[in-house]
Image (cartoon, rainbow, N blue to C red; front, top):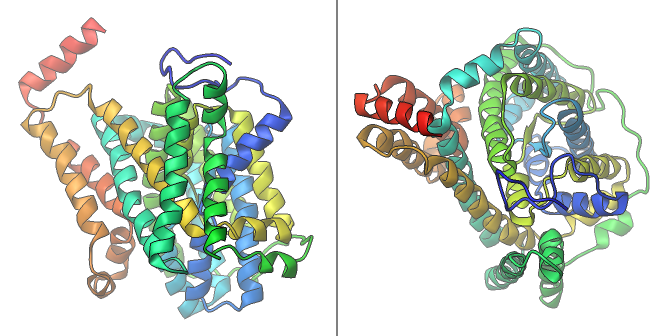
Length: 448
């Protein structure tokens, strides 16, 4: 193991070789800590899919996530990023499916995915746009917004999960407490400290699941009912139907998802100390588009980089791409082996969300690391603060108001991350910099 000079908290470097067994263990840790199945379950419910199709839909989302992860990690961004179903398009997919059917859902996904890929290559526009409109103040604020916007979902999921609320809180507390203890033990860089840090998430999941079993909250009956093997097929929910309005709607949604996933890339870049140069950003856009396109062929939903996994990297100090590649392979296996995917879905939700809350803290703190180098004058205070305020305002927005606005506004307001990210980009462009600030930035760059 080596120590990253730019980020001393990283103990396993991005391209550092590790054993296959270790890679699989660390990859499984990432998969177990993700709530990959939540978005597909919500979408399946809104589309009124029966139990058999719902199970198959979840499997295909696992498969799509695995394929997208391998594409992005091996040939796209080439950073440790795990892809998973985005929550942003839930409302749009439900609306399209309800009005036009499942064929129109997947027909609307394909053109938008290709557009995202083309923005990276051959056009190479994506990196230029990012470099122009996302300086450190914007990137750092987006990272903070990502963490803040995810925090309430952890608490809401704990309170609304099946079972007694008090029991759920205890389960989540035990899971989070074990993770925090492992992180603190991990400060000791030698011996047992490194061990506890490397597998901190798995230990937290095991402790939380054992606690949940004491309250009778663990049910493995679905594992017995699930089949051992299931082959995927192209367009399993019917031939694609290409409706212009549905396609334009999803193109807009894809652009919002791209803003969301760019925030994740900034988190990973900050955590690992890796530079997001133009070549890497364009490859990332290409990988994002191809991953979404291929996933849609098999019946999956749009994929995005999961910030929670970036937080796990910050907590464990493991930035190895081999571990993330292993996570991609495991996700593909979950898509092909229903019994395995059923085991993952049996981990009680309070366990995952208790861990997720601590992960959100890690994400916010890494955003703070970026912002701490920015001169906080009146202008920058507004650029940073107002988007955070709008993010929180969006999170607590009553559902009746959300449903009363036009569809395109609904899609934006459904994501606190999207609102905050758009706000910080716009404010940084429209609010003029103070001359003193410009001079300070130049002076700082000369001294570095």
